[in-house]
Length: 148
Image 1 (tube, rainbow, N blue to C red):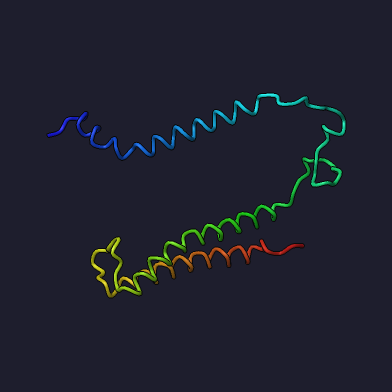
Image 2: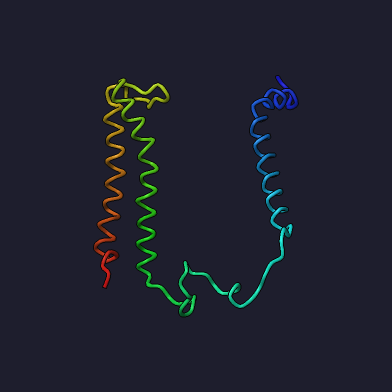
């Protein structure tokens, strides 16, 4: 039976790079915050300097006007389908490696075997796409994509 000090001593070499990276990141954050408060030159103020800059155009109207909710719905749908791609890349790597070699060496699914693994992975992604398609059709029927 090992004591807590012995087990902690055996794990410490693996955490050295992480601790170093954490110290460097915190040091850089602190340095950037300190440097931003040091005045390097005189700051000019005035009416022109204090106006809002909108890509070279003079600001017109109130900044607190209401936007149509459709802008937000389309943005949320874009994020949904964009995040879907993040899940597809690792799946595609595992799927094509499994299809080429017959089995994945990184992990195994019990009770399936090598022959059914490619089919299982394909069915898994088919279910994922079916769920996304149902959401897309629902949004289409609700009229999210109509700009009237």
